[in-house]
Image 1 (cartoon, helix red, strand yellow):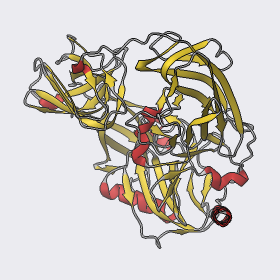
Image 2 (cartoon, helix red, strand yellow):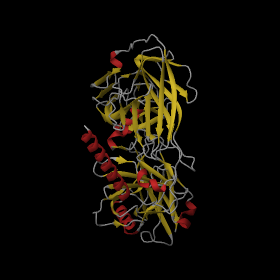
Image 3 (tube, helix red, strand yellow):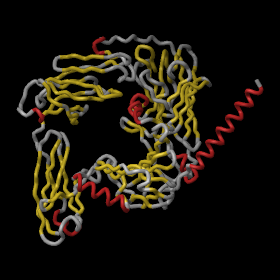
Image 4 (cartoon, helix red, strand yellow):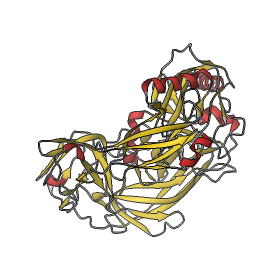
Length: 551
């Protein structure tokens, strides 16, 4: 037995040394000349996904020189409406994805622009050979920016482990350059009585408690627990996601989350793990997220079946080891638990195929698209302005792990052109969001990813074009036009100057302006010019406008 312990000890020592060597050999340089600070960290809770990397601050400005983190090569070059200018760079066994850049540099910049004109498209992609664009540590390879869906100047950096394809936390590769001694802090606790199996303070509903105000909590039966907490760093006011959360009950660990890696396909599991900004410390039966670990044999759920105090202790740890604790007590109080009494027709089971067929509505959910059993609060109503009934599948959106097909029948056909119909999701305030869809035999067929409220609308109104400061176009060499569509959004656009293709793009998708930078190598300078811009919305409605300017 002693020899076995020695072998295990030597194996652990060897593994730790290997890890240390690996960490040192893949340590990255600062991508900028200024000290590193972050506006966002790896794994933060976002809508339907985890934040996949680090957001480096750039002092609130664009155009900072971004340097290669080590020796490597450029593996992919993209321009997209979602992430703006994007550069993929491979370093050893890792690929970085650098998003929201303002510009590429050197031969890469020229090659991208040539391809945009060749394909007559703002969005392009290039996958060069590994030996085409080698980079050296410290070499300037791009300029930081604010392109794509970006709310301010910064660099978003993802790190992909090539052997697995996983997104991994880049922070350990910069740990020697980050000064942080601030531990995470909790703000609230949420208790989740399980339907038909538990109560909290005599209620079947979720209950929230501020940290420090958790006295007089009672429960009985089976409950789950969640915590709202954030990490912080020295010298900045931003708040970040928490790397590790550990829950112990009566001195025994029952749950642990470690946000250090995930696969792209795991992103939507965040909808099961979280409730708003609360992180659940239990795992729903349909959740396969690898970063969640339970050790009590009951998916992290706690059984309160004795009339005594149960002591809960949370330990919060950030990626650099700063630690804090939160504790509270739940008093077991024998309480009668009402059984679930819900129509089977509107009860969806997480581990089976589910069907919902109503007049004018068809929905099929394959197995494993739900994270837990669902008890629908179904309702239907007639709205005069819509061409179909409005179907409330549930009063609160329930995310699905994959898109599922739904069909909604039309009550009447106000227009003959079926391309003008679209399925809309309806918020609690009545706001409608375009979901697309196609017309087929009196129904609109669409893919949905939430059990929510839906109807069918008609869009026959073309987009609106608003020139921004046209008198300055010639002086600045920059044409800016606002393109707006209130129903189905802008689907495509194309511009020409003097009859030749002009490269318009949407540099920042939050603002949505269409921008063209005039280039004397492509547009003749001196004299009058004619700009023609065509914009089409999601239902094919098109607006064409012509403008005259001098440059």
